[in-house]
Amino acid sequence: MKQFFKTAVLINAMILIIAFSANAQTHIYIDQTNGSNTKETAGTEADPFKSITYAFLVMTSN
Image (cartoon, rainbow, N blue to C red; front, side):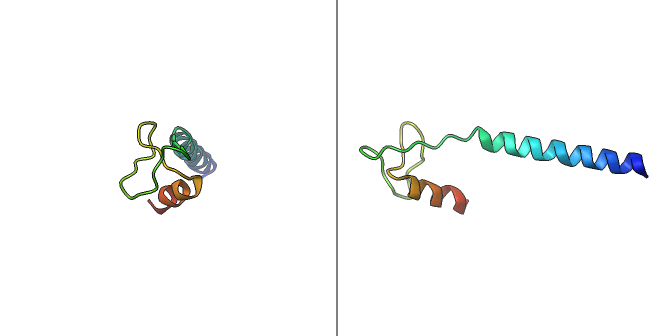
């Protein structure tokens, strides 16, 4: 039973590490001068958001 518990803990830790690693690689671009806060804005380098507040709202609503 102890071995099963250790394996379960290890698997859960690996899943958390992978999940946090995937989120850490997301890039959101903000440009207060040339950006746009519309539904069509992608938040990429070529199509940045205008404000960090709008970017946060869009990214957390998905």
